[in-house]
Image 1 (cartoon, rainbow, N blue to C red):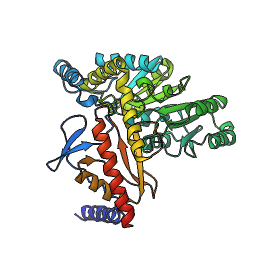
Image 2: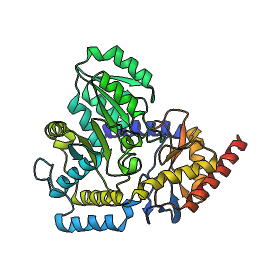
Image 3: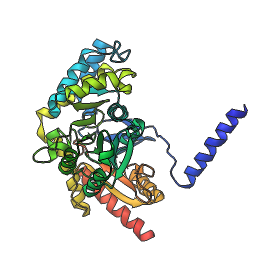
Length: 391
């Protein structure tokens, strides 16, 4: 009993410290009625912080595809892909994603986080160098650390700093990788991919772009690479199925040779049960819908632009709009007030974002109406004025 008591004492002390800083997290039961309506504590809210950018998680055709796959193939895959989990839908999905992203091959993982735990450690080791954007997603950092490579962090979107680090450290490394988000999840800005890829090419470094928030929303749905002319296509294009595609899972689009290596050496692929059939079928149907309707992918950004124009904010580059409020307490307070007015916008606090930059991370879905957007802008404008006056 002593060890249990000391464990609970340790956890209690850590929780107390989080409470004092307004950084404790508490999951709340949330019932999704449709793509943009949820219910919490018996109250209906407009969801303005989901990553379901196209509303496809609730699209009837996507739901029916998942239902049919479950009826035919079962609820789970039963084993890893290399044992008995390689059902036909996964191979079909990989072929579709490779064609969609313009690569030779694709490898599907259990989640986007697992994909990034897999890719860098399979390609880099102790003799190698990994250069990573300061604001890259946590799973890119986790994969970099697992690789055992030397890690150098370059200032956010600062290609001059990246060039300096490559000049200083590349010669001493066997191989080098550059890791960045395509669309940064907390700020919604884009990586300067053409410049990054040019530097990487100059120094023989392999670029991995996490396009979790770009696929389905930018470049006609093909992602952040296609937001540039010509497209800025990295040799390693990672993303998720769980956001704009309305399903679950992650992927890497790359050359056939690279994907073949990861099929044998990527531990989160080799040792993880394969995606259930429903997830693969849902993603396939989502790709059908995205390819058939260019306006669908364009709508979330158009709504974000409408919102920013109403509030006098800078024009957004993606459907993600951060409203930085500073302290965790202030972000929580404005989030609660928005909930009282019928909007769900979760406060984002450290360590997810840097100290002093707690914020509301507002995201727009093709399923939002213009009236939803206008009412949210008006509510936020009045609330932030009230908060400023009270300080």
